[in-house]
Image (spheres, rainbow, N blue to C red):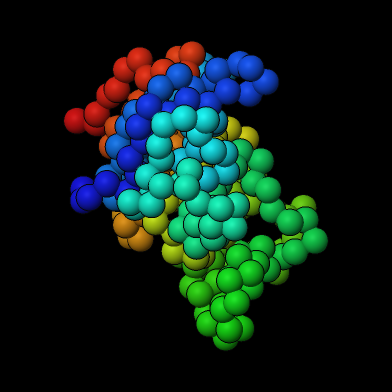
Length: 226
């Protein structure tokens, strides 16, 4: 592990008068894989959104590589998300009218990367994630496991420092889920990308160095992998 990528201090967050996070404090070293577990309503996804700059904390601080996310403008937060954060979701969130390759390429188009460079990076990443043979398929033509591999490729295409995964195996069968977890572990090592993984599955925590347990918006326990 190396220096802290994320430093979270006494973060509170409420929605409609209901306090979802109640003073969460944690540190994520660069390159660490961290699992967030807890019952529904414990604040896992809200914390994930605060870490990635999707939501702002009501109080407390989230420092991303030394930058206070709470001090950034909306445009500043969007720039951090585009260039430094990759996100993976349970239901994939692929654009239905784009092919697998086009879905992966889309963030690079937004970033203004030249066409030849985009194509080379997309092709290399699809090869690495084992989905190159489906590059021209639409999401509707892909299995759940294939769609998640496309989503992982898209999340990594900008070479982010932080990967956020919200129940990435929740919509997959056990074999596909295990394969996706193995891939996430391998790629986070290769790219030296920090991973924060929200999960209900104890099996999913096997790829993480550490597991934090949330309940009612507070951290109630922490486990480290032996």
